[in-house]
Image 1 (cartoon, protein in one colour):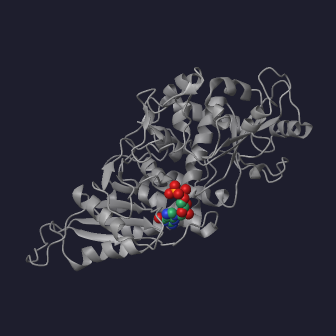
Image 2 (cartoon, protein in one colour; image 1 turned 45 degrees about the horizontal axis):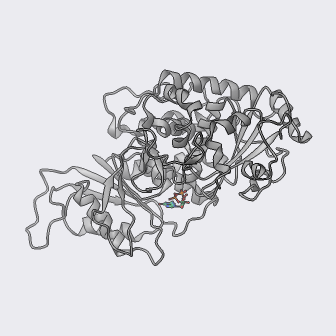
Image 3 (cartoon, helix red, strand yellow; image 1 turned 180 degrees about the vertical axis):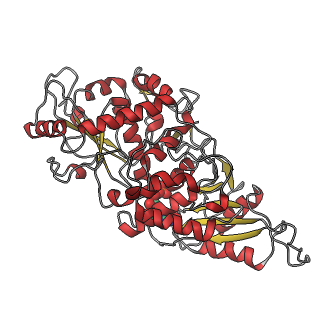
Length: 479
Ligand code: GDP
């Protein structure tokens, strides 16, 4: 038992309450069935039986339509003809990698949910390292788009591309009235999308997409919350997720199994530094301010947060006599993730130089300090994924405002983090942090549009379960 130091009495279900299907080869992806050993408790959130059955059905569809199947080959042929009418046996959504790893994971989950809702098959543009970071999530059939996919430069599509839905609308090149439609459409759902691209979130436009076999989607956003505002998906989403705050928690644990290389990074680190602690505290420090790190005001903010919220103990003042620590030898392991090592140095020294008032032993660890973001660099991204995952194994979590890196960790770990407010003018905010209202990630760039009334609408105030985020006021999240 890899995590024997914390064996608890509850039985551990390696299929995560029916979320995962049995029958995968364990050795090709150790994390898939071992992940349960590294979590202190089974998830308090059980996937609905309907979600389980839809996932199994999806897996069948994926097997029937995946790369190089007869249906796939036939549908690929449509691309070459340039025009399309009638129906096809299999329809696809191709996800294109964009932005940092946290963004990628969140949008891939969004694209998968969209595929589930529209009976499409999800194929993944592998980019530089998707295949290196994650195991195959579906049995017997790859989710990676074949390298010989015939559409030229599909992964270079952007806001300006004439193939985008928004630009086609602009040129009046597409409408529900026409019988012949293109065999593919590019959906630009990046944060910089415009009003026409955003019509993706309207039922009427969705009904047109139903007739198009290939949808190519680029996004760096967790767009799930806005799907919950679409009448055509409402009932299905309620059936899939009776508890709405569990969408990424379930889909994330279903889809994203660290590859064996990344699992090695995770388990070695966990075993060496975290496994034996009585409690694990994760602290993710990500700053977006210009200037030389570490920032003193951020350092002060992090310490104020964990002291005020009593997540870690105070240290003894120098004037006071040193307490004997024999009574309470509990230990806490603090896992810090940051591009910079300065915060770690200071917090480690704080707990080395002075004893804690409670007598607890505080170990402070940071796996890497990569200094700068290096998206699509193989080893860098492996470490990023390992650190996200290690954070998700925390008992309590502090995250940085607006960071998808933190969102993935919190949702995978079923944690409502304390979010460090965004500092203004290089000053420590007061209060330094606040508790998230749900573990769901925030959609940073939602549409503000009422499809029926064709007017502006505050989409964070339409239904009680889609609200503005704590850390991005114009964003929306499931609560
Ligand atoms: P976001 O920009 O905070 O929303 O998160 P992303 O994951 O999308 O992009 C940030 C990227 O910067 C990560 O994917 C990593 O490549 C890198 N990065 C940021 N913070 C850390 C960290 O604490 N540890 C590591 N290893 N990489 C980080």
